[in-house]
Length: 419
Image (cartoon, rainbow, N blue to C red):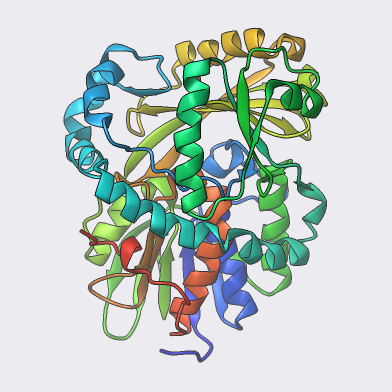
């Protein structure tokens, strides 16, 4: 295989799949992207996890979801269905293997290992995004004003000192800010804070849907193509890899699995059992909130961001572990609405709400690397909260793997069968 021109199939047209496809095209490969509804002109994109995220490139996110003491919080996740991190009782049996891995990843030693691996990707995230945004003509979507984490109590502010020390040790640049400094940065915020952290290197993509559509156009301009279909029945041989779309089988030299929360079945067909599951993420859009904030604001106690977008203020986040089949939980979107009424009453009423499926691994690390069975299949999924942030660097690594180039970082922490 090697660096010669190859035929590559990318399954999934979320931001990770699109970034992978564009990097592969830039390397001279022939690329087809398979998705049930890719972000082409005239199509909807609301189904995509990439549509509804918190819209922030977040290099500060070196802390995994599972941290020491998380095991003692699991009963509370079951008892409080509206908490920032909650588990649906009806999904508990199916979630059990993932949950065991989640708790195992929360030891102090594991958190250090995971954070070190995350920092390697995050330190390269922006540099990997920039050439893609430039080619796609998406640079005007960037609003680079950093991100604020705010703390409503003295106890939370004291805890943030430990959090700040941990992030700094893992390469994050940050400033501690006082209540007066926060007021100067965001004068429209009611003063429900005692202090905070300002991550200056973070920035907002004002419309991730627009970014996806621009990337799709760039892919088409380079000769890539889109196949609007569900990909299934992956098969690998010595000569190629094939996948069924409708009644047809497509063959390629390499295949990239970037199907987000739907990647587990395809990975299994490639020969890799992965503990992928789903975080159900929510957002509510407040059109009247447009212009109230300059940068994303996260109240950590509530577990969601308020992000300034092109079309209003998006309150996004929270984690509900409940699989792919249950419908949107209206009580969770109402909880977000109520919090915004308190934390930013000038935002008015929420005009639309959304729920999507974050592909989540128990250790908060994505799966990036070749299948154990065959180097013809490359995994690129499981990014959890960081799909937008890590899409560019993941695409770059995928292109390195297809070209058999040294990736520049150790990919063993992201191996599909990592410990």
